[in-house]
Figure (cartoon, helix red, strand yellow):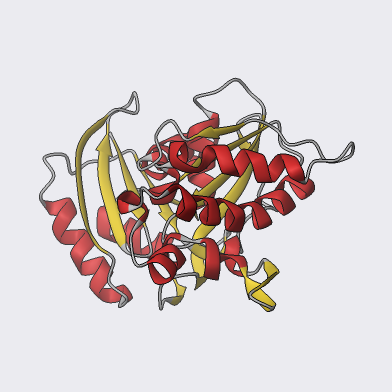
Amino acid sequence: MYLGIDVGGTKTIVAVLDDSGVITQSQRFPTPQDYQLFLSKLAEVVDTFTTKDFKAVGVGIPATSIDRKTGIAVSFSNLAWHREPVQADIERLIGSPAAVENDAKLAGLSEAMLREPTRLLYLTISTGIGYSLVVDRIIDQNIGDSGGRLLLFEHAGKLTPWERYASGKAIVETFGSEAKDIQDPEIWDKIARNITQGLIELIAVTEPQVVVIGGSVGVYLDRFIEPLNKYLKELETPLLQVPPVEAAKRPEDAVIYGCYDYAKEVFTSTK
């Protein structure tokens, strides 16, 4: 059995997966801004699971900087955590080896495992914006740690972090509603335009064969895929071809499945 821990800016999902990658138990809780409180809550949740013995743990975190040699998460996008020894703490708490990685990268890996080997750009739009590049089912570690907060574009007359006006949090602040409650095509048109600005830049840099969109906003891709494709195509040039844009097949659980895929990969390859 494996344990997957998806630490989000607002909620954490913890799931038990069997050796075939099937979720057998899961729970979620609001992610505390206090790291020690998070560890305490995580221990409480894991204690409720029938299974206590895990081959490995995969942990997805919204970190913009990770020391992958030590498993220390240096900085975070939507959490007030700093230089936390996530890998060591999880291993101590669970009693199993742990693999820690940026959550968007794990989500991208999960979606890549469901498709033929290809060059896949994954974009998650939730509380914040994360992205990753997965090439033939291997995460490109050079792309995506910083997420959408360090991509700057002109917006409302000044340079603004993309995440600040195109994320799920920004949607609530701008339109007064969460994505799940928005039905107005005009609002979705504005959301699509904001997403396009950063997405076209990522396409230019990563040259993917397919773009996959997930996250709590990506769940509703069907509501804004038409204007999104329209705005992307308007920016297409002979040197910048826009690939197909697809919805994530497991938009809300992609990180959890990626935790399983990554942990299995890491600890199988090290044997």
